[in-house]
Length: 138
Image (cartoon, rainbow, N blue to C red):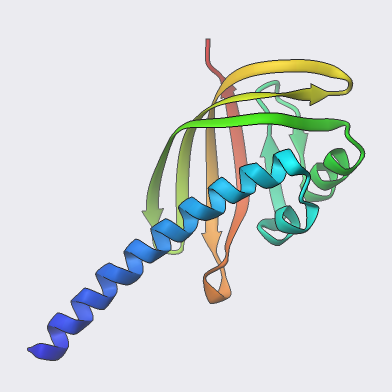
């Protein structure tokens, strides 16, 4: 019985740590977008990444990294208003309301978005973004 209680406690604790870890990864990922931390973004995105913008523009991983490096896309401010995480085994669906300001192709933008992200937990607990879709909120 003692081992059962300890096992349940560990499962609950590890689940909570996983969730917190994903929350921190999401927060750091958006900071990395603003700071153009290519190494962090590369480490936390899948090689098969699909990054869909609210204007139907689609980037894969190499394009996303290149657009950040060349300043084609520059995120000046990303304010996450709310973040909701739904877990499904090693995959999590994340719904975010955000205000984003930046420059794309030398044009300023200031937009409120509903963002849906899919994250997958890999070896050693590292979360990787595998898909992202955004919709403009009026």
